Amino acid sequence: MPGVNEHAVPALRGPLVPVLVTGPSMSPTLRHGDAVLVRTGGRPVRPGDVVVAVFRTRPDLLVVKRAVEPRAGGWWLRGDNDLVADDSRAYGVADVRGRVVARWWPRPARIRGRQG
Image (cartoon, rainbow, N blue to C red; front, side, top):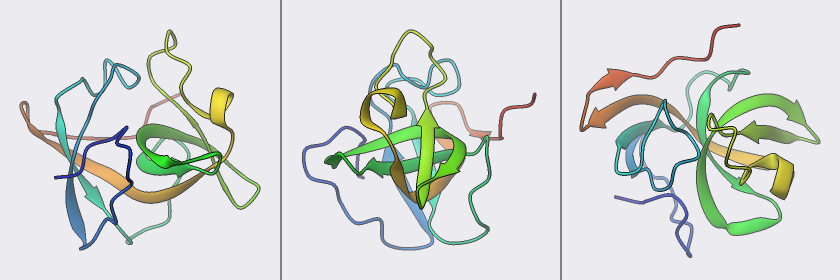
């Protein structure tokens, strides 16, 4: 199972891929140690979706963030934890590899976009 913030970005193969979350940037939506299912393909990414992506300035870094808006052929991403700025504010535009559709460990839950 690939984890985010790894040194070598693995290819996400298959329609549903398990990914391990590391770090606090998506808290409280996702926490360090959560395992999520990522859909590759399917419907297009929309603002508010939680995604797995690679920043263009950090191609070695696989991240889980929230899609804010499309920019420069990619996406501007933010973490849900405002105290952590390891997102597009620091690294710029990212290329989305897949959309998080569910957390399956340790507390199964469907992941939905932010309201409002």
